[in-house]
Image (cartoon, rainbow, N blue to C red; front, side, top):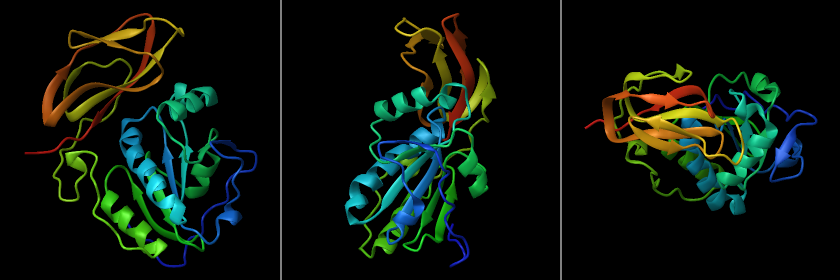
Length: 252
């Protein structure tokens, strides 16, 4: 969504915030370059699904001036642990700057309302566009190219449901705890946390065993299209399940 021109300036980063992959960043030092900020949580499936685009935009456009910043605001106990966040950043192959918004200070400054949420600022650090949730990747890529003054290129969708003309279904809402039951989705995920390190933590999903080597959002079931199904999730004593999540699939 395009923002009204010259109306909203980028909020300053909180003093003392912890950063990953970079020394402390100051917002005033970013003047003269477009800045893309995304709020995310490594324990949220929607955040993991947008992450590939953030990595690609950094790899493709950072040399031309784009600054990509992921602001991590954890909504679950594992993602509120800075050590777990650092481990997730390394595991997920994130090399662009990550700010830990552990107390949601920057979240409140933005008046942010969801994960993921991305904000694109122009070279004067005025809000150029924003988007909540997954999708609108082609629009964001076009806007980045517009701010950099370069020709845009077709979006390479990471999944069929990410294509600009894709028709996707409405997934079942998130369910708390170790939930089982009927659902509609393209995929089913769970926020899982092994209770001991170095163990053989695992859960049972519809009769099969799924290892849980680390805390995070783990995909339990994947479908080729938006599908109705029934989840049977069994969690033993060595794993805590904080929530079950669902992501949209392609219709047709």
